[in-house]
Image (cartoon, rainbow, N blue to C red; front, side, top):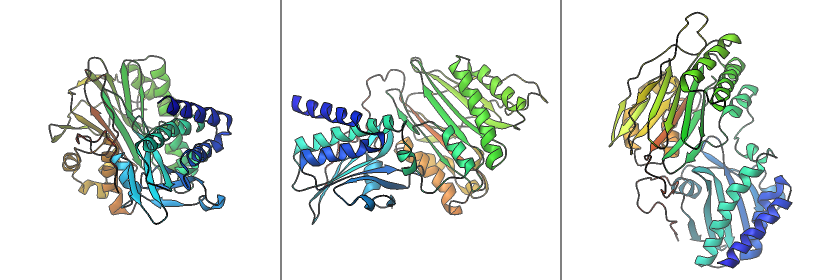
Length: 412
């Protein structure tokens, strides 16, 4: 065991000495050296959740990976991303092994190796440790290079899209003992400014979903003012009502129109959930397999205080261990989305990880329109496990109810 720890320590030291853009290659080359792998690849999941890009391939000509993007649907890569389980098979070239690269529920990508012989448990454990370390390598080095950002994009964004993507949290998913959370944004043809955000403090989970009026740059700038005001108020320790008030004042003061939104705060020790609803669609809740709309008080949208002075009401939300909460924007209901029975879909996807549920729901709206939506469609999916859960095993797999989800399944 000590040898494994020293190998990992040596690997991390080598990564720290490498240039940020070369850090993944250092991991790949280390695995080649340790296990005689003929090829080692890192594939990153793009923002759509529907493809991976091969960002690093040790053992192959340098130019072979630069533009390779692989659709996930129906592929073995999709299987590993969804289940978060190791995949292994025998090929004519050797033993193919694919492991997930994930951190706190954020499915970053995949590590793929071609080994000369069937790996034993020691080798598979070493590869799994390297994949776990690689997740931290990508997160840490993403501060210094655009490589990973480039890999996550299927096509170059417009200026409005560039602004909007920068407003999203660095990780679209988060897992902790008490909850699992994931957001997904399906952008419209002319971006409409949808954003979602979350942050985890020592005692509190903060979640928000916002939807400004307008399209393209106007919507992106409104979203920038709105998200900046909310984050600034939250970081200053303001309560929910004050956060909403500052967002309202900021939009009004800068002439950025109005926006709907929901602000949610959950006490991780007591489980108390409190909500502000600023003209936004009601959230949905799945409890014991039955989905329902949460009918809550609705206040004016943000940005209308100049014309209609008003306080924002903070209301309690009934949230119990085992519940799934869905916060969404009105793009999920418009045109083709209006034909989607979200309550029924929420029930049908009850056993899926929130990451998979969020993608499934937004895809149900986007796919009939061939991806060309008139309004952004956004979902935040939250599983509440309860304040008593402080030592929960996190699997990040697609099926959250499967007893074996926490174990890597070796397939041949």
